[in-house]
Image (cartoon, rainbow, N blue to C red; front, side, top):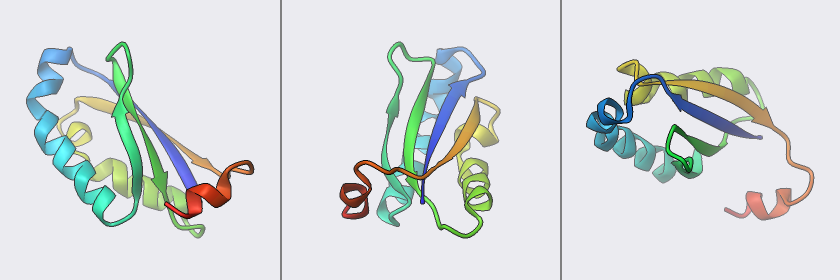
Length: 97
């Protein structure tokens, strides 16, 4: 199963960027273990979006754990909207990533 995480900043950008490197290090770790497929800031920059791979069983628990581990979330810089997603078109291509 896949998921989309929409991240919205709760603080001004200059406060958020103080925590940017720990946040990006966390995302690199998620990418290395196969949970994160892609991530990046929205334009204009008021948050970001992640495309995630999560287990079919208990996807919400996996998403909550990903959110809870993010330094942006831990420091109160951002809120998450977590959307489990079952793609129909393009699923085969995603599975190869």
